[in-house]
Length: 315
Image 1 (cartoon, helix red, strand yellow):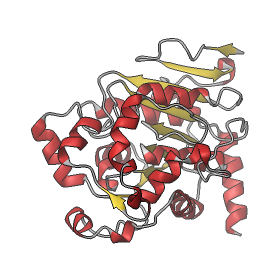
Image 2: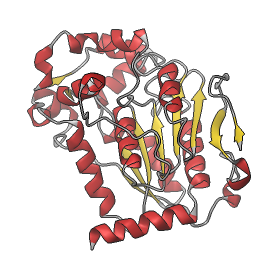
Image 3: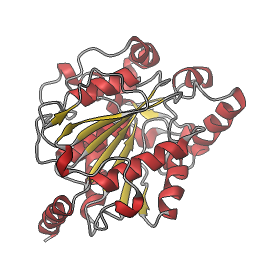
Image 4: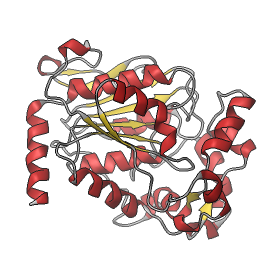
């Protein structure tokens, strides 16, 4: 068993817990990848954005021959301008609604997909992987599940405007442009940030935010993960060095919670990236790494087992 200490410097490197003799390396050449790897990818977006936040990743994955599903959350049924004008369709949307939505999508597929989630979507991806779905999972700048007791100060400061408005539990919340620039797109130029804000940013359902925030003091929280699950699919965490909202340190904490599991779990950090890692300059490197890793780590046995499970569920 080859083990790399999770406390080691993770920047620009991947570290893992598994027997490397039995596994393909994350940076393996595409020609060496498992030909039986999943061809379907499910992308789960996060709070304050729409599925179009994935458009660069989606186009890249499709160019490599994959079927890509980037479905909007329940309640996102209008364009950005209309959602800002009337976000009431998102009122009351919680984590359970998001898990149920993507579970339905995945169960309708002919094969277990690669599941990738960004930000709050990373939490949903973790929950789905824990439930036995997917051939592999990638959680990018992920919101943590229950069990991460101390968050970075920057996370608390970023979310303070929400916590000062308890009424958002039943409604929605949207950052001002100034605040969004500081916590979401802090590596973007002002003009780039303005373009992205106007094109992409919508109110977020407060209930889901509060569920995640209060998970550690909520019995039977919907955000609970079995960190010791040995039967789940391989899971990769990706962190951005400059992320303020969900800092790299928080992603490393999340990664380390899985230490007791024998299932493949790895972490990769990208220098200079903000929380907007999937759409900012340099997104190509992140997309390439995430896909190559997922293809390399998805074994035929794992995929077939999950395919059989999905077939039984549909019958």
